[in-house]
Amino acid sequence: MTDVLTKEQRHKCMQAIRSKDTSVEVKLRQSLFARGFRFRKNVGKMIGKPDIVLPKYKTVLS
Image 1 (cartoon, rainbow, N blue to C red):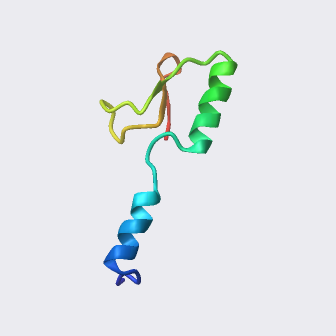
Image 2 (cartoon, rainbow, N blue to C red):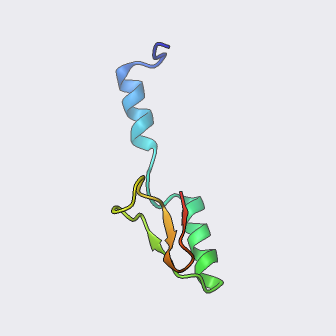
């Protein structure tokens, strides 16, 4: 499938997309922390670099 956007439009669109600290992710982290869950964020050593890692429960949230 061909790209319907020009190179400049694609650049502007991709530049606006954030990969870390989105508003939904921040609210989820605040909620987890308030409920007593401790976590690591954006762990680079794991495959896929998950957004939130709960080591105690061996769980990841992407």
